[in-house]
Image (cartoon, rainbow, N blue to C red; front, side, top):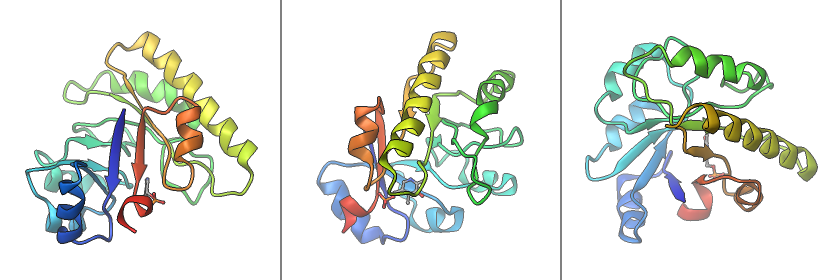
Length: 178
Ligand SMILES: *Cc1c(COP(=O)(O)O)cnc(C)c1O
């Protein structure tokens, strides 16, 4: 089970404090901010939309790109995002299987799993159904691709629900840092 401490907007000092408690995997969503705070002691995930022209700044520093959302991004990568909402970045859920199959052609990308951000809503049933769809997709992919072992879903407000629905990686910001 993995916890990514989402450190976007937090200072280096705050990150070091959290690391003392034993959490040493951090998630950042902006390249510039990540570079300013980067410390090779820790493990880093990019969790926000990544522009192709910024990849060069993070290669060798980032362990996982959770937000791989286009064929253009060709570096070490972990997951996909589910999204039907035009305001959200990510890869459309319905095409995810096809996308992952295309990514197999990239020799320097290892697909470790899929990631989603659930809809922002009070409707718990909707969130549960999104988590369930992701979990089903995850199990199908795992069957087909032996390297896939990560289902990243759940944030401060919904991580319990996500774990109940099969998540094995949560990305928590506020609940850790506040
Ligand atoms: C900010 C963020 C999180 C963490 O959100 P919290 O509500 O602070 O736990 C998780 N995943 C992504 C993609 C984020 O941008």
